[in-house]
Every structure is written in C-alpha cells, then in structure tokens.
Length: 212
Image (cartoon, rainbow, N blue to C red; front, side, top):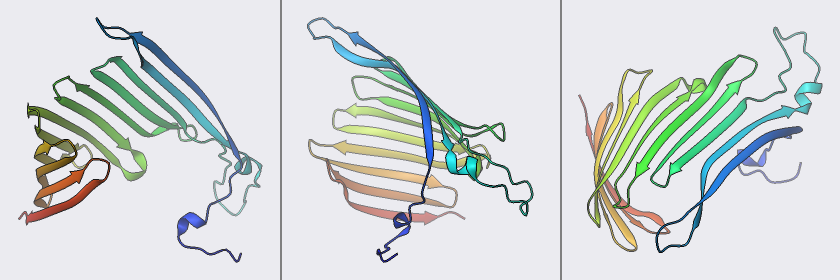
C-alpha cells in the first residue's frame, strides 16, 4: 500500500487464467541462379483462447439481472500467407463464443516489386467502436530517391471517405523528407516532415485549411 503510483499502469489487475494455442508455420527454401538458398515462411497460422479461472469460480450475484459466468475469452485466429516474395495476405479475427458474433476482423493484401513500387489494401472492423472501413495505399518510385504516395480511407458506417492523402518523399542514405497534402472531413492540411533513420521524425511543419 505504500508503493508510489505514477499512472494507471501501476494498477495492474491480478489475473488467474491459462491460454491454449495452436501455431503452425510452413517454411521453405528458395534458390536463384548464382545465389545461396534462403529460407522463407510461406504460411503462418495461430489459433488461441484463454480461460479465466477466477471468473469460472466466482459466485453468481443474484442482485444483478442476467449475471452469468463467462470464463472463455474470444477465440483469436490469425493467418499470414506469402506465396511469393513480392506479395502477402494476412487476416485476423476475434470471435465472441457467448454472443455468437465477431468482435473484430482485419484483412490486408500487399504487393511490391524490386524497383520500390508497392500497394496495400486493408479492411478493418471493430464492433465495440462501431468502426468499419477500407483503406488503400500506393507508392510509385519516380526515380531512385523520389517516391509518390497515395492513401485513401473509406468508412462504411459513415458512408463516405474519411481521409485522402497525396505525398512526395525524398530519401537519402540517412535521412528522409516528405511533403503530404491531406483532405479530411472538416479540414485540409499540408505536412512537411524530416526524419533521420533510426531516430524517426525530428522536425515538421503543418498548415491547415478549414472546409466550409
């Protein structure tokens, strides 16, 4: 009781639970002419669930209407597929065994080439926050140090685009500069940022324009 308290992290709630999981990884070796064979994961699968012993052993409170024991957590499943070095697909889902519904599921598809071009499209659903959106992004390498970028996020629950961003990036050996123009629901903004590799963003400028 005399221990100091700085923030909410100091109040760690006690837990008495165990978790079972099933993990499977498919690994293979690729070979190219004049190169050594390299190992790569082609597929990854993880299925897990927890059982709360304290919840299972607690007494039902008759004063609380509909009070039931729910010792099992959501079933969490994740899969990652990488059939080729230039493409991968991932999906994650959490299923509520008591309400018989998904609380969360995400999917993502990415592709890239040796030149530096890339694209990604992802879908997100989170029932607790009533959030459901689709996001797409692309990167095109104009010349080796200069990339053009694009990102758009569309909300299914709002029925409209939440954010659209256009950018240009210049990358040197140890630093990076990016200029981004972003359109959101109520404002437009221009960002200029500078980053050092290994240190992240070190400086930036921002200008906003309100939409009427």
